[in-house]
Image 1 (cartoon, helix red, strand yellow):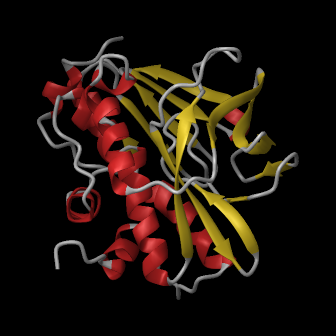
Image 2 (tube, rainbow, N blue to C red; image 1 turned 180 degrees about the vertical axis):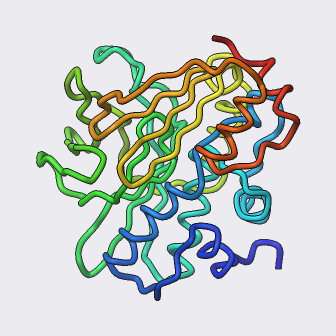
Length: 271
């Protein structure tokens, strides 16, 4: 069937060879493997190509064509994998705050995230927040600092609205806010249409990519490649000078195959 999830193909794609069970150890392991193997990338919106969210299309793109994707694709794939393993998953919607002044009004729900409930407790899982990808699921507990290999995070709550923040060199920075209302496919389709077509969304004019290894965060913003250590500490920054160099970075650093000749992508990039 078109919408049947191919768990063996997914595990092969992320390089996971162990046994999978609906427990915390499995969740942590496949979360880390996913963000290492499948990069966050928004090439399709940049090229005015449609972003399809049905499971068959997401699997064909991210599993078969060695592509990445952005939050709706990434977390749709991850959610399907978790459910196939036997996890209890609730799909949620977030309002991005990364670039928003603290006192600005809330924007639309343009992010997908997951709550995973297990015997070990509830966890927030998210493999698709493309400026600060989580390397590990977080305990669904508020007002505590949670350290991972690559970051420090804090979940807070006020009047039923949860806020996830990340520690950066300049201090705490809010990633997104959300409530516990489960989302359905049409909610994500609406958010996806906005983020992939609107001039007010960054993806139609800016190439944003990220991959998270075990000890480094690789980020591409148009022609600038940045490598970060934990908590966003910059290790190196580099300006990409040619389409050939971009192609090498896509292959070697982001482990992905572009859908069009690299020159076509490079010529769309700002500095």
